[in-house]
Length: 86
Image (cartoon, rainbow, N blue to C red; front, side, top):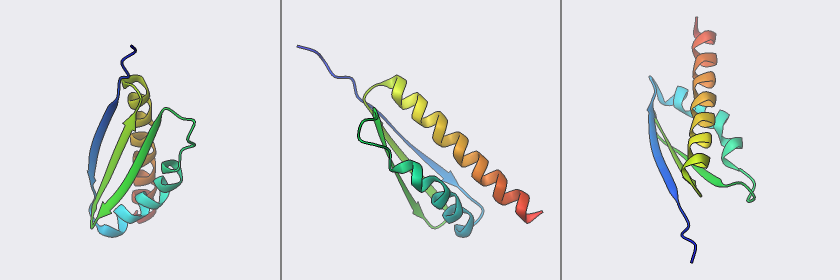
């Protein structure tokens, strides 16, 4: 019998405003719709100025890869918003 390893993580990003959180959510939303053939899935929700990311993966390697990607995309989106405000 083969044991299937599963891994998951939840991360909350707190933004200065609900508007900023919504902009980052919209930027990440297309990435949430990963093809069924991938080894992980993601869910992005927002409560006011807090963005919640939940990633479920088949193993820790897939979880780490997905988290790194989502964190990088969120940082880029946030930085783009901040650069427009200057």
